[in-house]
Length: 501
Image 1 (cartoon, rainbow, N blue to C red):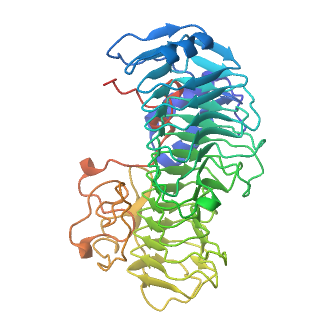
Image 2: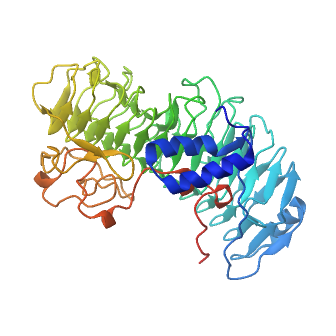
Image 3: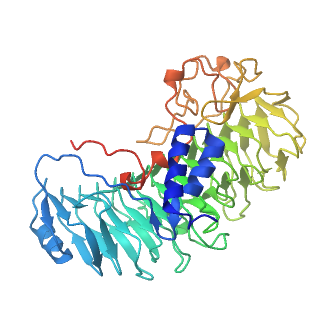
């Protein structure tokens, strides 16, 4: 971006103006432009940790930190004094303790940093990694379970991977963190989750910001998030990626999220100003994309392999970028893909993959495209019912698609939804295809809610076509496209810290 070196004062002024304006499409783009100030630093907002039940033990060196960790008892909090520290290897072998920076974001771990979390039920929070190089290694490697990594900033740090949740670990979480400017040398995903053939991991990535990955784009393994590996496609991971913000990562890799295992859910995420990047069901089965926003020249969803994938309640306003695409891989051809109650407006191609993909269903989707064909590369094996469209279809569809102006209006949250007189209102086909409920995750398989979180009518025939119900109760709306202020560490402008329980 051209203004990465803009004066700090101007950027702060722009930040304040944007917080007041709140209009999504324009303001999101401007906010993203204003947020980064230098190649590896961001606006720093001083903060303090909420009061904890007991005082934290303050140490002033990484050697003292390791000694304190090794002697800690469950429930203890250990804080490293604010400052910069070089070339440390830390082992969090204990369980049930908190290891944190003295103040959120006040500690910079630079040089060659390795952190191994082998214990269970720990919290690691408040550290920044923005000036270091560990080559082909991983910064934080988690083999234990029920650990939380939070309020962490990775920016421009050179590593193969920033965070790795190992196979056999369970219920680990990365939350309220920022991941930006990960170099493609060495190549590797910023966040790697490996899976077990016998035990789902149930890991969570929540309220994180992924931004500004440099590189040539394309598919070469430098994804922000990768869940599984090709050899793990049959493993049920049941990882949840939710409430995350992706912007400008398509230059690093064409897969913003790369899913290579089964029964994962990606929901409530926002992809904006992200040309060339897509959410990709690369391998595995029964994966779900639910309630995501794909905005402002961002890629949508691509399915490469596997079966039983659900794409439900999403909003695609992708500009020239593909909104949806299916590849054909003879060894594991994509099939039985269900697209239900999505809205496609001002979007790029919907590529049906040509001969090969089979058993696809489009049900109760809304398509609004003023110029160019909606569909391309027909596979001849796709079913349509209950859909509305404005614009040229581009392929022959015998039934299940009604040509009509949907009369969409841009709502207060900046995206297009049915107006009061829209033919989409109360027009859904009640015969939905069966959608998978992933064990242990709430996937709304009955589509009882819309993209904003408000309930749909109980009677399926009274529901609206597309991702949005005509809003009758604004107070019921609890979900909207994310801004940077909704995600990431508090010290980089993210949401306020929750009180310690």
